[in-house]
Image (cartoon, rainbow, N blue to C red):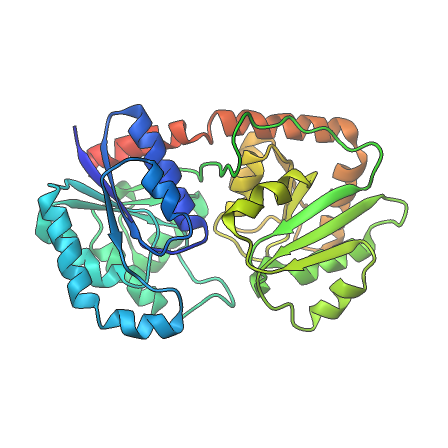
Length: 368
């Protein structure tokens, strides 16, 4: 049985949850000996520990001030990672999401005799979400990788174009669902005695298209009964005044802790992803996990997350008018809502379940 280490040192966001879900599914299937290397500062560290798998906890950092001090510890971190790979006789390392320290560590994988599988979430930086040398860092990770997994064909095309990575060593495995509560995924019903509730969730960054969303909201006929909740962390800039002034829009601007996410999605009837650019979306993955229909722009890999599974609407184009039309359809057509909600649950329990995702990873690990 292959000994595979899932390696992910991000502290919060989608990366830790993605890693925990994949580890849980691989362990449940029992075909791979699954180990973990994670950040001790991870927001979901207790979830990692509860998996009861061999676990290396690395002290990383919580912010810019700690980052400077943590950088001085990098030689010790390298030594700890190197020793863990050798001591645990790791055969394959799966880097489930990039971290600033990954490029400094990847050479240790080959030196230990293990193979490296890198999961690439983005082939290029999102506008407003970049940092110096990012592309060079990705190139270094890819250069050390024996195989690459992307979460969409859109990202796979970007990896080939931007980094000339060989296509035969690449595999596309879709983003598995994100659950934030226990029990069966609910089968949603359209509301009858209250406004339809749309949810925009996630970091408030320029590429997320909040200006497009607000333009769309302002175009919806006043006779359509709906509300929009914008929930996430970031700076709205000049758009903040429009958001605050709109009577149907509610803003909850903060970093949302893991234990608060389930309630936010439970209160919604559908999620919206008005992104101007996207690789794929963890918010859509969470929408599947909550049984919600979705609306997205035809940007990047979003269409791949929705169209094959019939769980949402993709706007006809990137204009506010097209997005407003999609929102209006979903809020007013009960049969459409019922069909999309049912398809969301079916996809979550079938092709996007972590058991199916883990099965595909097993094949990649075997081929590494």
